Image 1 (cartoon, rainbow, N blue to C red):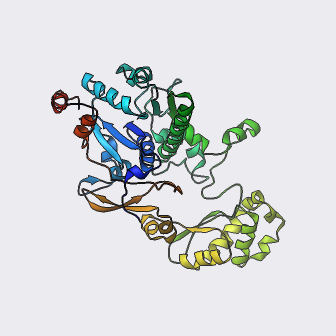
Image 2: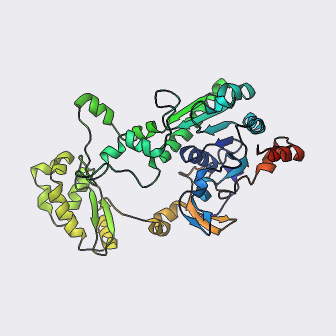
Image 3: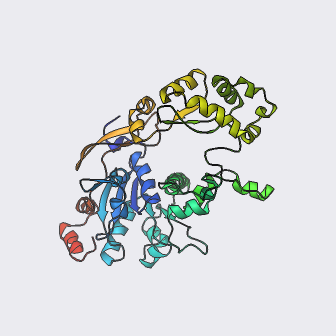
Length: 402
């Protein structure tokens, strides 16, 4: 575990990002950039904060998800639909490298804050637009959430038991995938800017990154006219591959994607005869005999504790993982060695654990300078940086623009 550090040490120090997005892909993309040292300024409506501030669990009335999602961000309020709020946003965009927004297509243009307007003030600006269905096409104006992407991408259709309904994930999977795609696209656009001297528009449709993560389903349909069936925890490409319950009521996951691993597993569980079967020679053939393999592996695992199973698999150099919840993750020595979990001092709740940046760099650590801050906490300070006088800020606040 590690404590908060100075964001100016990050690899993206000096990069300014305006996060004008909500729920969840856009704010998460901004979080990733902030983790690497970018100066992220979160812009919210004065009277309608980002709904993520009330999403999920809370402690003593303090939302916990926002503490992670809002980390490393300074918080400013502005009603972009008002003249004063537009003035504030233009001032912010003029100083920024990146603006991230997820309003319905056409909304920024209606407020006279579209890319042409922003680029006239700041030609180097990268505008990242994150919506459910993108800026083009017949669905562009539909409300779009990650759940819809999980449905339309093919994910739900392939998830669940064979005789059960399509299954959605219990968390924002599509938003998380889209946030990574957006952060990557922003960095591509910034790399291009280094050559051209000009920014451009990034158009992320949440339905697309999720589709890209699901493998060759489109090519399979094109070439074979077949679709991947629902197989539960099993795979059509190898076996044994499943989750198995241990004697102490815990669970482990086993994968045998490599032939040598599959052979080690069946020998370890006392069934070397299975490795001699003609059908054992390929993953696809093993998958057709999953019932037999699961019975052998599941019986052996069910007679041992989770720790005994993991130790035996490790000794046999076979692939297994305990199925963790958050309490297990915090205590796991591998996550500790990687520094995955960070301990941050929070103004409301004191010391707080959260997952850190996604990766490590040999030259620059990821940084968490602070947890998510209160709504509008930095409005006065940021506007002062932009040259707004205290009297001007007071006038904007009186009119409800900030």
